[in-house]
Image (cartoon, rainbow, N blue to C red; front, side):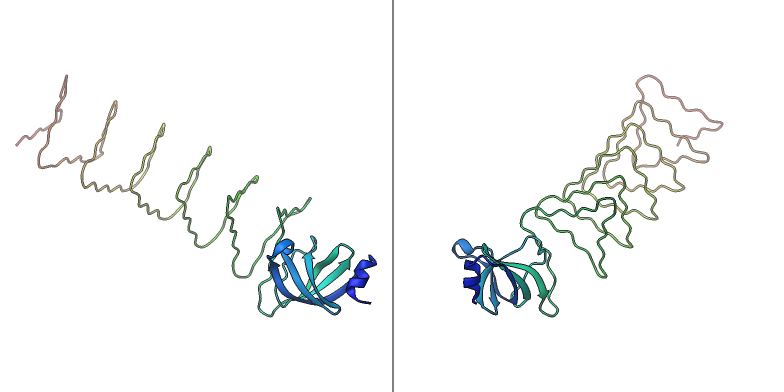
Length: 220
């Protein structure tokens, strides 16, 4: 009995075959597969439970029903071809009461045309090397702690607004090519040994009082 007659009698049976074409675009068959079965060549839909996307040349298991032919499993693929997990619409992986692990011997890529969101009680990232390329980055948090051996920063402009800044260092070197300007309510500079101020020209002015105090004062 041919597949057409079996389908007409609303009988359901399984049959293996090969995928001839994928992604038919003409007319109502858009997104269908063309499969070659023992009883003939048919247009088939992928069953929802078949997450592996069939490719041309794959050996598949099909279910022939009164509603049509469905690819329910991919039995064998082309040697060396990648296995593609695909779903129409949203896809959600859920582990109730357990964990989900994504493992690969070489690399893992997460690619999205829109947004990629991560949320959890804790987030841990560990790697020997890392790089981030972001045009605009916003960070919102209560506490930021970092322990690094070396930091190199190259920027066109840095603007920071903070309530308090405390720095402790053994040596600090600053090189400014043009203007170094500080505006403050009170400035207190103290050195244990020596303060040196040198320049082509030096101007010291005060609106009310200027005081110079020391055991020895040399001018000129």
